[in-house]
Structures are given as C-alpha cells and as structure tokens.
Image: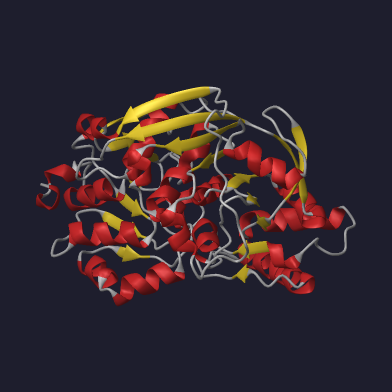
Length: 417
C-alpha cells in the first residue's frame, strides 16, 4: 500500500521506506544553479573532497543572475566555471541557455521514478514527470556532490484530486493558486502531494510543470503527477536514462485528501505578501500597475508566450511589460513562430532566458511604491525589490492586464468568449 514517494525512496535507499522513516537514498541527478552552486562548491572544498561522485549526474545551469549584472556576479560565475571544468562536469548550461527548471526537463533529466535533488526550492517542478524531486540547501548539495547520497525523512502524502474542466480564460496557474488558497501556505509542510483527476490528466506537460512548480508554496516536500502517455511522449528521444514509471497502490495510505471541481475556478490572483492570500480576479479589477512580468520557471514556457501573443496581437500594452522566455529553445521557437515579433510590436520588452526580476536581483526589479503583476511563483515582501507590491496571476490575466494598465479579467476578451 505504498505511495509514489514511498516507492521511489524505497528503490533509492534499497530498503522498504515508509512515511516517517529516515533513509539514506542514492540520488539519480543533482542540480545547482549559479546562485547556489558557488555555496555548494565552497562547502564541498571545506569537506576536503577532491572529486565529485559522478560528474555525469550533476547539472549546473547559470540562470539566476545571467548575464552577470556586476563585477561580483561575474567573479562568482568565473570561479564556478573553473570548478566545473576541473571536475569534468559536462552538463553545464551557461548564460542564455535558460532557467534550471526548464532546462532539466528539456534536456531529458526529469524522468518517472527518479530521485532528483536541486539546490533550489522549486526543484519540485520535475514531479510533473512522475519523479520525486525536491530542493535542499547548499551544504546538503555539497554532500551529494561528494557522495551521491542524501538523508531524507520519507514524507506522508496528501492526495489532491481535481475533476471537471477548466473554463475558457482559466489556466493551470489559476488552478494552482486556487488549491494553494484552500490548502494554505503551510498546509502541506514536509508532505508529498500526489495530483489526480480528469482536470490534471488534461494538462499538458508544460501545464503540469507549472502545477508542480508551486507545490513548495504549500510547504510540500514534493508534488507528483503520475506518468501517463503524455509523459512518455514528451520523453521520447529525450530521456537521458532508462526509467520505470512508479504508481501508488490502489490502497495507498494518504494522511489527507482534497477534492476540487475545476469548473468552480475563475482567474485567481495572489495578493501581497503571501502566496495563499488568493482571491478571484473580480475583487481586484482596476488595481493600477507599474509593471507586468511574464516569465519565470512557473510561466515562461512556449505555451505561455503563445497565449500572451494571441492576447496582445495587434494591440499595445499600457504599462511596461517584461517577457522572459524560460530557455533558449523556447526563445528560438517563439522567434521562429512570430510570437516574439508580435510581443515586440505590442510594446513588450524581451529579456534573455533566465530568472530575471523574479528573485529581485536582475532586469526588471521594482522599487518602493511600485506594483507588479507577475506570472512567477512568489510574492513575498521585498522579493522583487524592496517596498514593491507583487500580485501573482496566470499569463492570460497578466496579458489582459498589460493592455489595460491595471488588473483585468481575461474572460472579458473576445478571445475567450
């Protein structure tokens, strides 16, 4: 009667792993980006370890402050590049390749049944592929670099089921915010989430990534969508390794269960300064904006840019609008399809693939007194700039709001009628 997490951690530790057990698990793939790899490398060196456990299973993308925005960042990048070269790590994705949580799936590292650890809290994104994926701190990552193993407490699992169909103008991001509102920012602390139901099955792989990306915003250790035909199709010719999908037993034991109807969900907005401070868009219509940010590891994928371009086509934005593709491949596809041209003609600013203003470090940071509507995953006070106000929404709501210069309902557009 084990859950998906219990089965994956049993395989990774080589012994039965039940909720509450502590296990020493073998990691399949480990990731650290430019913001965390420098700290992990420092701790690795302090341990006196000379070589990483397996250079082929370590992935390092540069995405958080990329390109470097000052001399300090440039020095940190240089130092990490030197260490990567010394260790023979070939899975290095330098400036411009994209956000870690987009690059890993694109490059075939996110696979069903795998244990994937990232030195970034939103590593739970890879659960969209049926993996147990979670984030750790830099010291834990240094231990993984050295040994390929990590101590974990096997989490209890919450089952979330969403049936029905989303209305037009309502997306996976709205469904995610709606669930976070109901579960709460601490409602799944150190729990695994398993997502089921017809509304989940209908989601594309890009939408599932959006969905699992924000599991951490409920305090979850990981969020998992069981692998299906869509998962296997995405991984065809892409998967880096052999894999075996893992499914919960029919009598799997869940500590809690939630059931939702997708038809009850309208466009959602997370208000400052908590991700679970969520309400329907109708209560916030007309809220003035200084900036709209469309991108991040939550909503910078091709599908997101595509819907934004459909909304903005032939029109002009009334507020500065920054669009940031999640990866080089997304940018290339969006360029070749004409999406980038459409966005530029509408007055949007196109930033290079990376995290941009999401973490308040680069390109598009707001200042005190400014308000930003963002498609990213966090709206904590000071997250995008000291004193600024951050509202979170779907790409549809963000694009509709960019046209008005204030929070707007995308369902009012003819496109969704």
